[in-house]
Length: 246
Image (cartoon, rainbow, N blue to C red):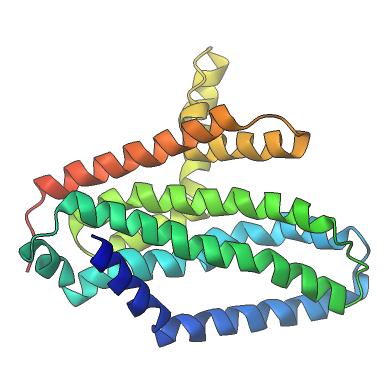
């Protein structure tokens, strides 16, 4: 598994389309920031992060989901991996590690890029605003990992790229959770059955609120880790039940 992870890291850091995509994304973000810079004040760097970072699970996470989880399907390399003796559980764990690594790097870089733009364009952004921006970023980074782990089950169930990509994007926009909340979770909560806390969206919200309020997050983090772990177990079960498609 370690050799596979090393090989995937090498493949991804030499993936030209990744640099092209994120290059255009960062340039586009800089242009949008410049066009809006006339109305900046000291609080803009944080307030705009609250609004604009909602797109990160799609803009960053969507590309990395495609590169990490779907490229193997398009290249038909999953068959080769299993054929060479790598277990399906190892593949899923390796994909999760790669998702954590690359999303962690990108979500770690983006807040600094965002803050520097606001400094350069004269918003008067304070250095201590970075901690607030990182809390906002952490929320969307955790959601990205959670959505990726959950939709992975669909990847290995259908072994096609299009449907999982569509489902990931819809989930990353919050559409699936919002529909569930409106149609199922809110009515149940009014009847005394609060199931919202079982969903990654709500778990991550509570982590963010706890960080802002300076409250302990260990229990919430354990809940999040359990969520990702259960999603990975489900993916493994689905993968084992599905015959490899050539």
